[in-house]
Image 1 (cartoon, helix red, strand yellow):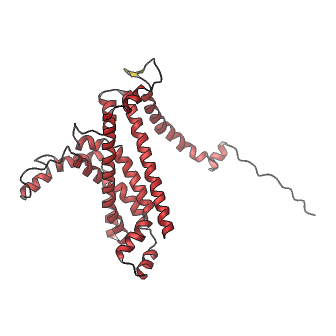
Image 2 (image 1 turned 90 degrees about the horizontal axis):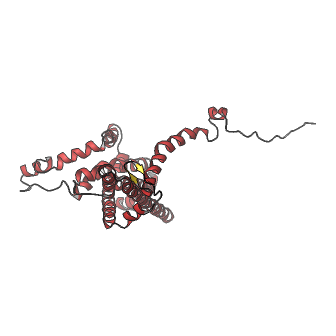
Image 3 (image 1 turned 30 degrees about the vertical axis):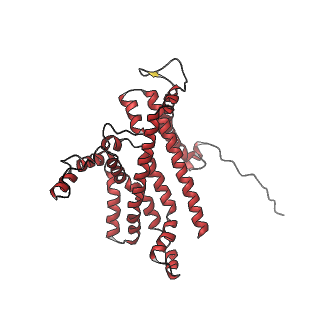
Length: 304
């Protein structure tokens, strides 16, 4: 007769041995601590400054107050700047999608050295600071001596130099070019690995190449479109370098106001209140983009 003894599995506690063995949640602890110390804590501190009064670097005696947030929410200028930030972000993000999709689609059809060169061309702008690329646009669009105006005047295309710098057009152009890689890379990852059998089946069933592209390829890449749109919108909505340099001193957005109130005026309380409004609205907009994109993706899946 064989004696079989059932024993309960030994629970692994939170010990140094389990950490060294890579068990449980211990491997994630260093990353969580790093994020908590260097990302979460500074953001929470900044947002908390919007609910206290800071005078000469010290917190006032009145303590917690909604006065600064109420002042921001009741200021019509703040809402106009938020609308401008939203409008510029939507326009520049839409343009990045329009320019990025053909590049990502072409990448999926290239092979060999041509594919490698295109990938290098996509990634290489990320090796340069956005500040440097913004200054490059100042050289291109700046006044009569700007590269663009000199070329147009020398060719006789225009008689007077174009006023591009310090305008909304300059800001949109700069944001579109600088944020373009962030839209291309998600599309590139999806389009280059898509299942081509669906396209072949569509063509064999009599659909045209245009119909196949819009009814098969585009729906298949919808998750990448949503991810890229949300990412580029977030960085465009909260960007202050490009509006500050290409828009000029009189051109302001909500992010520029945060910078000016915090760094120039040294009104940390109002700057923190503006930052709270900026981050919260950015979160809501991105959440709406993702929710709408997920619903549209499910609709395409059901339709297919």
